[in-house]
Image (cartoon, rainbow, N blue to C red; front, side):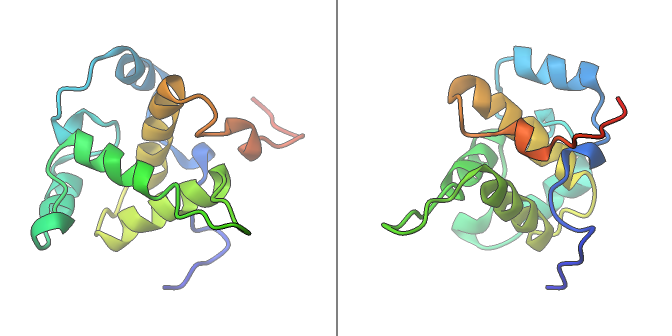
Length: 132
């Protein structure tokens, strides 16, 4: 895999609107894979392809995969937020999700952070010279 400097998770690359994210954070998960912002029919099809346990057919499974990628930890290495987000972004790429990967990662990370504070560190992606 060619991991160019521009590749990988970047919350600034997310094209998911603030309103869509806010709705996702407030809503109860139903299991429908496309309820996750950034996942449309093509991404849903890509995630559902594969063999047996590799198939992701609902939002709970995708969140489970996100949580699984938080490790494995060892005595000399702990998977921290930035590495975790990269692992999930590249997982989506490897599964054939071609668009909105940063939006998908951001939506799931932020929603999980409301349930498990500390799993996602948004400040790790802030620049001193941010112009927003």
